[in-house]
Image 1 (cartoon, rainbow, N blue to C red):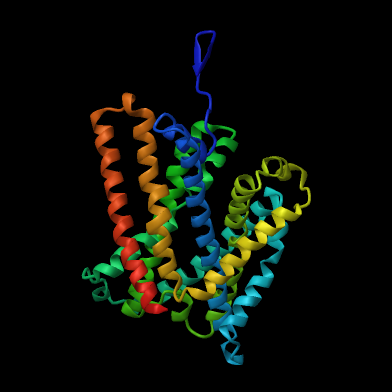
Image 2 (cartoon, rainbow, N blue to C red):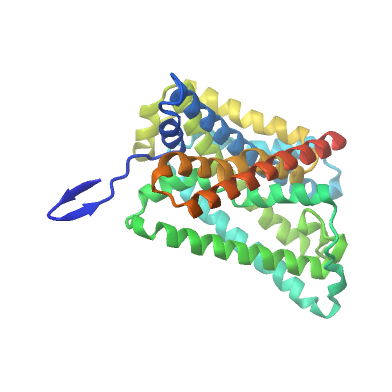
Length: 351
């Protein structure tokens, strides 16, 4: 806090999840702040790696489906998808990453509109009886992990808030964007279930007619490829800073666009190949989403923020605030443990 001429302004003292974790662990045990920072970085890298693997897995599935008429092996489709992602190794500037993310958003909007318009055109055949409230407990718990995963933007929030011209609008921006995403996803899933009922596929394009499927598949493939650079870049930055102690590169490359050093290229190559190998091993992307959401997603979205809040602001919180934090924390732990058990069980069954 700083004051001048009778005014008081807030000063930002922490810029990342690592900074917050280290502040929370300070004083608990000797060297725990360093261990806590390392743990949260590991969690972030795992989540980002799983996100990269998911996009590569989706790209492989779409390419395999699009080339089914020539009987191309799935492993070849995965390798082709990997080749198109090789330029990610040379990304050292946030500007091209931002451009690719914008193109990804445009592709996402186009896909959503195409599928929703098709569903609306089939409104005359909708069956409201398909909206059954009876669900399989294991399916439900895996789905909770998928939902948590789909909202895990917290890794990008600290730097995003720090880069805003008017940081006072951060909470408003967060409310509007997440509210819009919630409405959009709910409408999309509701229309899909009304149109196809229990036959609704994990990959929605499998339900589309053959004349519309190639176009949507192409858009989805472009979206998956364009989505990959952002989590890859973020994971690479964390690894370079922690493993190589390459803080200078992380700080200046965004502005200077300098070449990637050889050690950094090795780290990035290992990250890319790890996501490729995981994509070959995982049978279904929904299970990967559920597992990631239950492990790192629940921890980073529900568990750690509450712990941080309680630890750093305990003396300022009312009893009601503390109970709310404890309630969210408990819910996060339950969702995490049960989701991990069900997701791992399904993954082992599918191997």
